[in-house]
Length: 107
Image 1 (cartoon, rainbow, N blue to C red):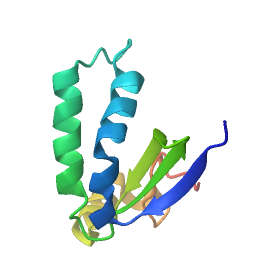
Image 2: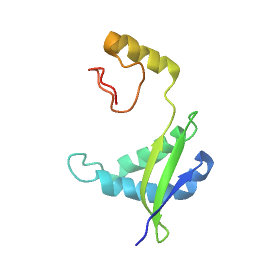
Image 3: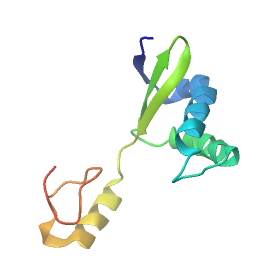
């Protein structure tokens, strides 16, 4: 099985919604998350709202026509970045990235 990864525009994400929900169920039903199908439905609804955020982007992996994985991201608003700088203090590296810790280490 060969998987293909495609960047998907927010307006096209809906065509993958059922597959994304299925992947979410398989990924988060087991411990430590123990999420049920209702929580997967909630995620699918939230994803539809998130797709309208400025800077939203998504990638969907498929194999043989089925969704096998996905990733989403959007631009962090400047006001949130400014609040983090205040909270993290002078040791902050000057940029905000996923996974950047309060220790101020560059990533």
